[in-house]
Image (cartoon, rainbow, N blue to C red; front, side):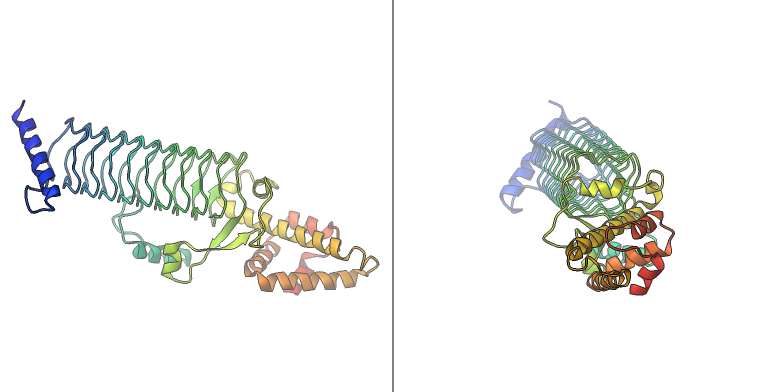
Length: 398
């Protein structure tokens, strides 16, 4: 046995004693900057070990215990971490490209600015893991708030976490923070992303078929050519997301959706509170296919790439107005069967005002769409089941 292997075995034994004695005996395994390239460490107990900056390229760490270990900037490219325990590990800036982490446990792990390009994380557990920028959440929140009001303070010396082409199929990313991460062309089929934070994430050409995005934050998400087939988007927030005609929504599940965030204060952003739910009635849900209908109505192909959210807002408004006209027609078809056009306009005015007062987002949408030429809106106002009105008359209602 080589001196290196004997030394490594002795250090692991001392570390085990250090753990068992709660630091009273033995010695913590500390090998910052050391070279362990291609070493055999499968099943090793490196709980709370310090391996910052170490070269662990192509190391076999399958089934190893690296929970709470410090691995800042470590090189783990091509490493075997299958079924390893990396829960609560500090992995910021780590190089994990082409590494295999199948069934690995990364719960609450810190992976800010890590490079996971082409890594295999299938069925890995990343519950509450942080794969966002390496800055405090409140600082990021302040920057995002400034960005939204046009006074952005640029982030300084930060890099996005790279998960391009990574295999995360079946992975548990529930409540994980992936803000600003690059997940382009990643495989997230069947992944659990419920309540995950995905602000400004690049998911273009990614596979999210069958993924669970229940309650996820998709604010400014880029999803060009992304496959959401059979995914669950219920209660997700899609404010300013970017989609195109190649984005797939076949058989998508969506009982309700949120169109905006509540951003009154920093905690509102950090906690990701949403508003402007659709359907508006909190007890109502979309019928199967309703959400996709909103996305597919009209000529939205090339425009969705740049104005996906704006077009969705218009389609939401058209649906809202259509529903208002239908309800009024049904409600007053017998009682006001012979009502004059002026009477029907007066009834419509009361209904529009009621909706606008009860739902400020509806009022904003209505004004925005009326102020922009919209043949779809004009067609609805001229040809509906209740009364013919012009956009100019609708404006006077507000």
